[in-house]
Image (cartoon, rainbow, N blue to C red; front, side, top):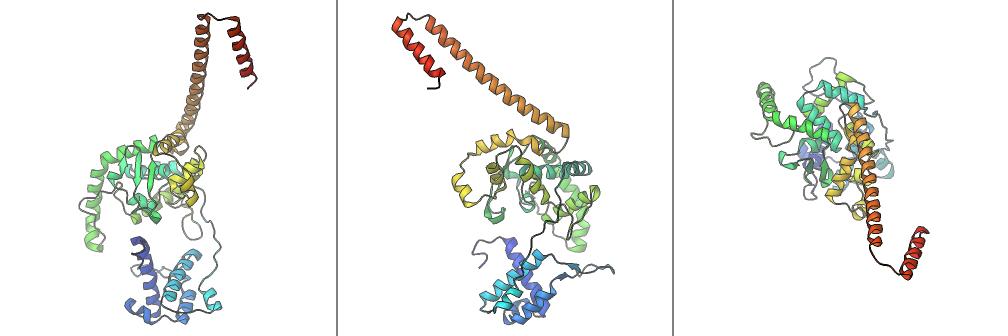
Length: 370
């Protein structure tokens, strides 16, 4: 039913994991879970999932259960509650409240700073610099980034296909000059990078049955979501390493937040939310901009998204100001030239006294703003 309702494979897999977790908790096979849908079982599960047990392959003697986040608990219970209701299980008011906990949303992360990004760029390789600059330039989600194909890139424009976008809301994003430079370097070294990475992974694929790369990997960055998060974690730990209540206080998603914050300083909010594909139904109905208009406005304010060379960011902003001033002066000069040509044209025409009076009255009316 989820597949028929156009839910993504990732969402369906998430449902499957929750149901499997519940089946394991009550000690029945997954295929038999629908025969054991007792409210009492769900209440016990709700009390027991507050801790996440260590993975079975974790052999460390010091491995301890960690506390599950409130949001994670709420999501798990929401999936199971829905499954119970669809199978005809009824809850009384107290039971329903017990399996639908109220969650106060906490922001445990801290704003991603330019200095941190610059240090990460210094620490990483060609692949990492292309990834970081792309995430900051585009505001894309990590999962979308991992599934972009080489064919989705056209110059400074990247197409986020509906099938890889959250909620099926795809669209176009753009690369800053800086991000495109890093991308060009990465694309030149991409094949060698994949060959070396595969050689390193070959023993692990045999030993741990790790997922093997496709024979012809058409993904732009040739990296999985899990590997991307690990790459971010290594870089962030090397330059900062701060942790929040449940995880690092900066995650890969912080790049998307960085884009939202800094792009809004130089671009119209409608453009920023449109590029992030977070617009509401009214925005999509009333905001009408062509792709070329979006592209032009993006590049006009892109200096706010530069990561390397802080002085380049300042120079870029000053250059934008000078270009706008030059355009204004050019327009004024053209207006003056038009007026001069009009005066010269009038001097060559034989005018009567009545014509001169009419012209004088017209000029007087224009000066009065009429």
